[in-house]
Length: 503
Figure 1 (tube, rainbow, N blue to C red):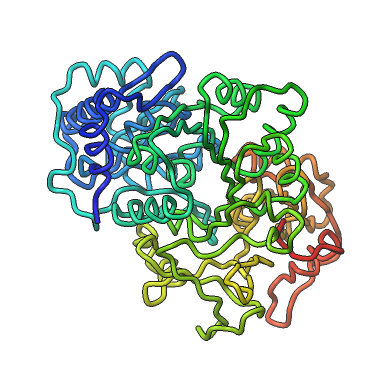
Figure 2 (figure 1 turned 30 degrees about the vertical axis):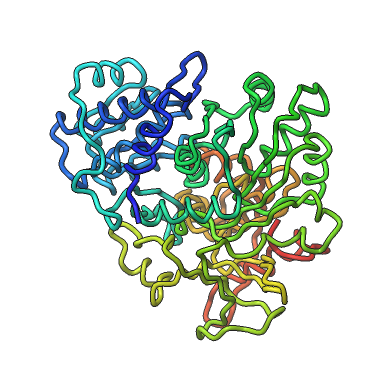
């Protein structure tokens, strides 16, 4: 197995003059990209960083993000991609929890600057840093089992968790992706999913290793995405279902030439059949591919190819078969495999399974058992090995491809002085897949409305975690004998008539 140094060194050796990255007006060859990665490595060493030190990045997509994603781990450091949609308090927690020493940032860092030793502003200070650095070889003293990245995801206890992914994890999942979705040297890939997600950065390594070209989109905009597809002859891209819906609508309304597109992948949440249909009619030349997984899986574990041929088939409701190199079993709570067609928990084993959660041994032990990752997703597998998601055993919502842990939102709600009881759950949403919904029991004598609660949340957590709706009631929340809130009773009216409880 290799480290993250190998793909870029291979590409620089095999195709030095070929265009590696196009970022607006900036175009870099593989030789230039390799050199800039070595300069970034040298500059971080000059700042006094040691092997294993954490380097965080808070920025939109761009060539500097690709450089950071490759060079930081390849130099023996650990990259910490931060979610640009998170609130300041959430970002501060990730920086402090990871003990990041450097923050690379393309916006005013505000109070985040106090959490690190060095703030490097993108682009000016970043470029100055590289201009004064000495090149450092990549991969020296780095092994496949070293920690490569910390990817922060929501926490079931209200605190975000740093998912520890090793070089072996990320490289293995690159192999898994390439086995299911082969890429060619002639490919031009549009990077429109945010690179702070493992899904956004997964294709980066695959594209470098296969000597393709990447075109970065700083922040998603369907019109700009289509302009880039037309002007650069984009052949592949990956996004969440809401992105596919948006580019399909834009293409239907204001068509561009997109016949170069041969593959559109999507993941992050289940996709509606109508979105598939609209996307196929907008981009008839493209194979539609669904990928399913979790950050803890680096992040892919199933692939469903040629969805456009399956739209009217029951298989279109599945998330595909296990990727080559991933073992998936559907287990009952005791660890026994259930019969085909029966519902159990999706459990994944393979070289892509995370090392664990950073400084959270108890939460790691809850999901990693004998080297396998218990996803918290409930599903069944049919006779042909296709996996069909039906619900989540974790208290989690997936909205627009972002994970929202209900306890995170509930923890904020309970900080409001008028809230006596709170329950948060997911409801179907045509655009985002699922939306966050809250039911509140107010303290006696308090006259609050849902909009006040929403504004209270908006000041404290990322916008996508803020409840879309709040129901306020006087009677206590429904509870089981031991006193656990029965969220299924609260969710049931919203999901009535649905064939599954995930959307």
